Length: 84
View 1 (cartoon, one colour):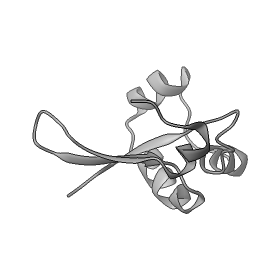
View 2 (cartoon, one colour):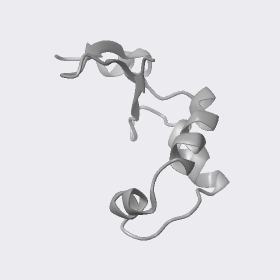
View 3 (cartoon, helix red, strand yellow):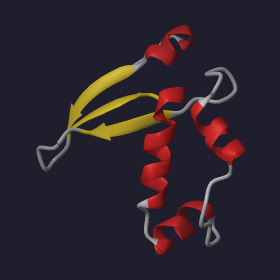
View 4 (cartoon, one colour):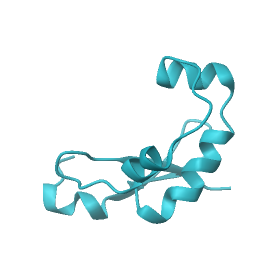
């Protein structure tokens, strides 16, 4: 699928996984900050190590801001949301 670069900020797709779980894949938004922090805090120590290559225990305010306030030119960030 080809997406025009000026549309990436509004990208959204609905998909089904092999286990029939429905997910939404979309561009990250500044409003996702709290959910991102909650997800980070819910990760196990081993998972954090594999993601960051060291035992990271918290995200700084700058890291959170950089993660959710992307320009979609130099940085593109998509998230996957699971439907419950």
